[in-house]
Length: 70
Image 1 (tube, rainbow, N blue to C red):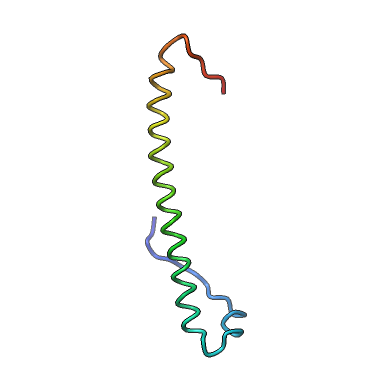
Image 2 (cartoon, rainbow, N blue to C red; image 1 turned 90 degrees about the vertical axis):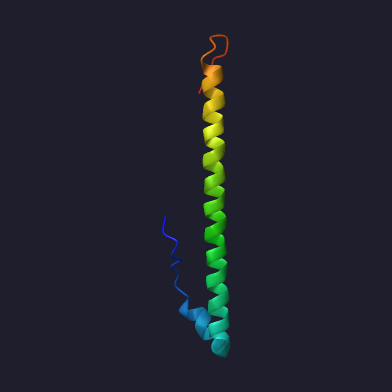
């Protein structure tokens, strides 16, 4: 994954905020960067949980008395 955050500041928003455009654009970029960080963190946690589930299912799947129906 690239750590570079790409975004397009909407023209209509820049026009609507006028002189405040630089501050609003900076806040907009910060929100997008924060969102990307949250998504990366969640993806890492999901991968960790998936690995644990695979180990647990692997242990129980070897025992013949338990069957998983998917």
